[in-house]
Picture 1 (cartoon, rainbow, N blue to C red):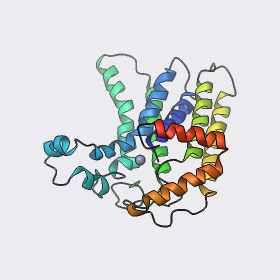
Picture 2 (cartoon, protein in one colour):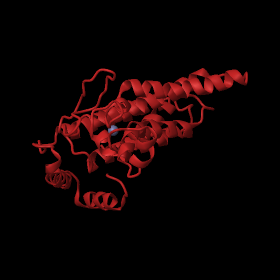
Picture 3 (cartoon, rainbow, N blue to C red):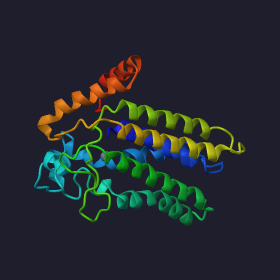
Picture 4 (cartoon, rainbow, N blue to C red):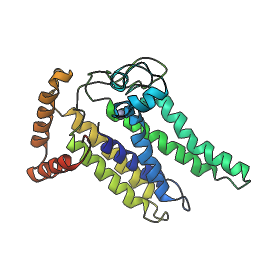
Length: 260
Ligand SMILES: [Zn+2]
């Protein structure tokens, strides 16, 4: 799926976790860590950067081009190590260890619970990214390497196209907005945790429902079929959304300088 949807999913997760932590824990940090965690796995797409070969590729003496790496099955290829639970746990744990060590050195009191929740936020936001990538086409990788270092790729189910899943984006956006609103409601509001859990659960159910109610439209996900599949995906969106919403999303899509 597209990076914007992943990032907003991370924000929904971050705000959701933040609702379970008592102030004075900064609310904004949960949103920020959630966004970072949601976008993080796609850091492995850096090999597609136009200057990758002349910079990182040459400094690290890589024998393959950035494009070969991106489309390959090396551990550092797209959907490889960085799309695994292990990577999310390792990088997520830094949000616990770095403040912990820093406070230990400066002999400050350590707020362990908040740091644990930061680490959990990053891990969960990234895990949702991995789950969102699974229903995408099987072309190239055939899923994500969820259980790295095991070599099996999980996903590539051909349920949704790589991008322009406007209906899914709107569900994610709505869930994130509601979770953020709740985040700024005083913690004394006793139903805060229940409502947060309810919003996130309803969001997940609606997302899965939308994915599963799509007709099968990707019969051949190879690169030569990209234009056909993309056109079919857009037609599907047109049939799913009311005209005004579809037109608004399409305009947004055309104006964004990234795949959406
Ligand atoms: Zn991804």
